Length: 412
Image 1 (cartoon, rainbow, N blue to C red):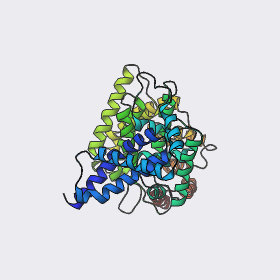
Image 2 (cartoon, helix red, strand yellow):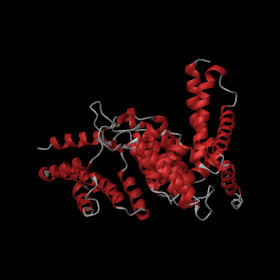
Image 3 (cartoon, rainbow, N blue to C red):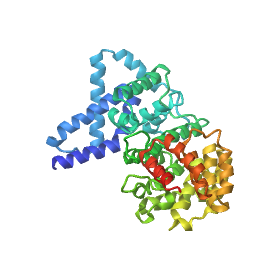
Image 4 (cartoon, rainbow, N blue to C red):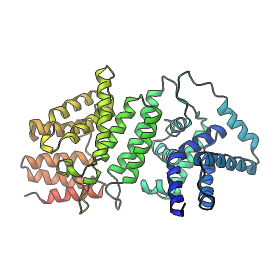
């Protein structure tokens, strides 16, 4: 096996086994620091030894055994075996899981990293590090902070877990829906940062982040296959990711949905997303009320079902938004609903809806971009220009700024 083949094997095993190894070590030793360091050392040993020795028949088992030895060596070096033993024993002595609970250490690790006692930005960073296996510099680059600052953020999060004695266990049956919702919110934050990357100098779309969010959501889906919102979020991500090849023009502008080359969309991702949506629609027909992510996925399924933007079933889109508003009456949902209203009832009706959101969405660039487009369609160029100016001022995405600037400059 060539060095290139070995390198590819290590990368593949890292994707497949990192979370499993870290989770197993965390369960055994009760310490995220030890788990993270030992797992990283095991992979470093693989990089050193596998080119000469060959990839072992069971790479995951080899890495887990090596990581366990590294962890024990560290505990011995620190001469704190008694303290560490007590911490590990505290994990083992937790009350038994309820009968029927999902027993997977990776899921326990995800719930620990996404515990509501942690700040949202800490949950995101810790999940990407401990579950996703991204390096601290990679996470820092993703969220436009210095590596040392990200290292401190992750260190503080781990320290809080230890100090607050946040348990490494599955939530109770009563707490599980809310806790799953928190996990999905973290993954959606990661995906959105990739889908509409913020900050100057970054690519308009960050495929590394959208791909990682999808990978982690697939993991959650495998662990919680009956959860409708997990399926809904995965479908939503897939249907949005499918449009990525057509989302940025050759000049670096974001291309809106109506102007995208639909032939460039990823047909396999669309087919998978549609299949998940159909499964959830069947569940809804059987009486399972859909959640927020399932409805958003259904809206995206309508858009990706149309061969041409003129074929879009806007009445179905609006009906889905009406359903979503009842679940999530947020101003952003109301803004997106107004776009569907504009297609059915005209820009004047939609503008009246949008203007009622002025106070709550004054600092949101998409609010001003939507107003600018509606005003343009109504022939109110001066007001449209002012709205475009405000949207450009607030937009953080380089491709979106370029698109909005061109649209503004096209006004008569």
